[in-house]
Image (cartoon, rainbow, N blue to C red):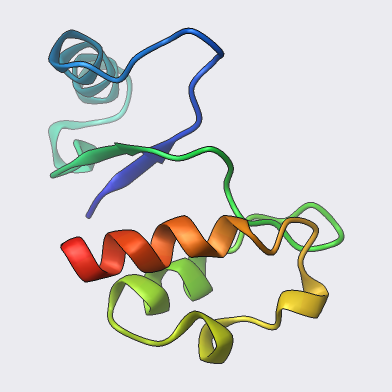
Length: 91
């Protein structure tokens, strides 16, 4: 399963940072939680109440069109879904 990260301004997701993220996850959680891939995104889609959209993102990555996975009217940041739709086509 992939991991999506929002980076601070000026930080680049390079191989060194990916290794550090994987190392921290391995040490503080467990080796089975280490993601297959790490992707940088500008923002994580959230509801108007601020909850992260995990299930709709998973559906989009599985091939469901974004408009069928989540209602853009219920999102605080509907444009955030577009990046996940782009990733779904490239994965």
